[in-house]
Amino acid sequence: MTENGKLNGKIGIITGATSGIGLAIARELAQAGAKVYVAGRSAERADAAAEKLKGEGLSAASVVFNMREPGDVIAAIARIADDEGALNIMVNNAGLSFPGSILDGEPDHWREMYETNCVGLLAGCKGAVHAMRKTKSAGHVVNISSIAGRSETAGVYGSTKSAVNQICSTLRKELENDPIRVVNIMPGAVITNFGRNFPPEMVKGLMAAGGVGQEFEPGDTLGEEDLAKVQTAQKQAFASAEDIGRAVRYVVEQPTELNISEMVVRPQIALQF
Image (cartoon, rainbow, N blue to C red; front, top):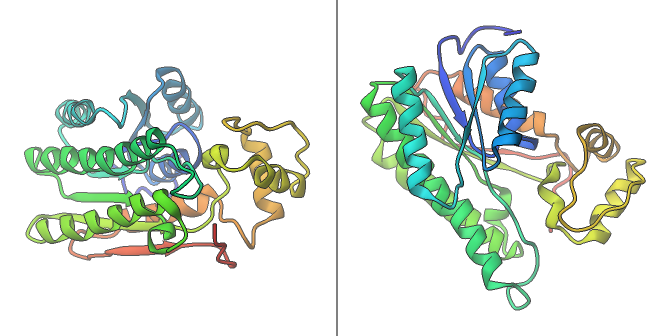
């Protein structure tokens, strides 16, 4: 059920929203009254996430596209805006990381990170702005970056997020005369399945601290209950997906005359990876 209705009548698209931070953002915006489009690469997972929100009494639908296909991203955004007659919120959340040193890295992994984290995000920004202008919608473009973008030790992933920070700054200047605000949100360490490509020893240690005893191999994912156990056990060092969701909800509930340019959202302890 909606809680305060501040986003009643608003239309939002959230990429990478089938789980984790994206799903938490979608839920927060829908609870405030928005109709949210849950975007993902898998139709099965996107449909399941949208149905989960609808089962909670929220307004949600699914949309499928691959962030590594910019034309598909832009076209999907345009279709939604045309169908709804508006687009007020675009959250570019989809992203991935392959941790490790530059010297030990794989070029295919570098390419996948840049195509998803940067080129896909650029497509989301462009598609959203054109859709907002066409439908004469005031709104927000929210880009989920990372404090890794300010780190000298975050490898190629950090460099993609540094690029996102620059994209946000440049786009914000381009849109100063539009009723469209660009918000850069930089999470710190968050417990989600984003860590599925992290070193298994690190993930297993976190699981053990949370009392989760299942086997883990790179690429595996944990259920929501297990993720919650790990986050609760490590809450001083890891934020939750819901923390980021609340931050996004706060900024998009503000009038477009107010420019909240960026926000760092991290747990009490700042971990370095």
